[in-house]
Image 1: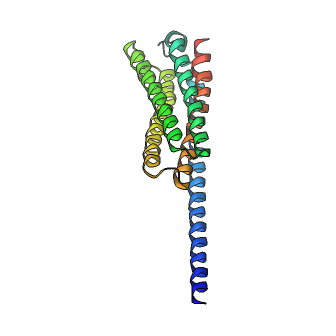
Image 2: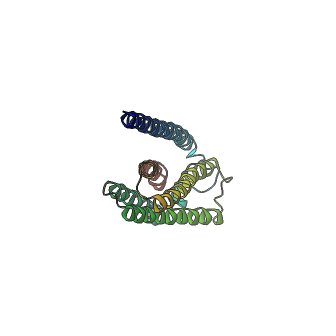
Image 3: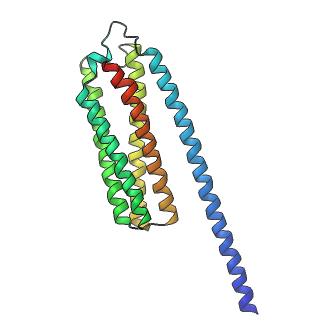
Length: 207
């Protein structure tokens, strides 16, 4: 009788712990969506600002004169490829294979670093050509919009590195699985934002 009573208490405690973990995961997921919505509002504001200021050259260079097609096409290719590799990482989660997940997350992070490297090179070249952030309202809006996206990509790389370390240490658990899904979802969001930048800033800019 005493043994059955202990088992019942243990069962209740296990259910309580499970419910607690579920609630905590739900809160984290909700918090992430709130964060994503605020980020969406931020980028929408920056896009609106750029749209208003994109023809305010103040006698300075235009987008057609500044933007180099090979550079922004390469940036786009790299970032879209990284979105594909991050998707492969989530497929590794379904197989419960930490090596696959870690491998594709590392590839994704490397592609992200390559993207940031190209963006820094682009900014440096523009400044050397006399197209600094203070040159015109157009360039101010350009640097703030594209630079903000670059900062987000850098944060995503750090976040991804942290997730890789946790998976390497603890394997595929509910916690690391949830974190991997969240960071890859965030990465896909940044890819979508870049597609808008590619279209609104670069494609329209060179026309």
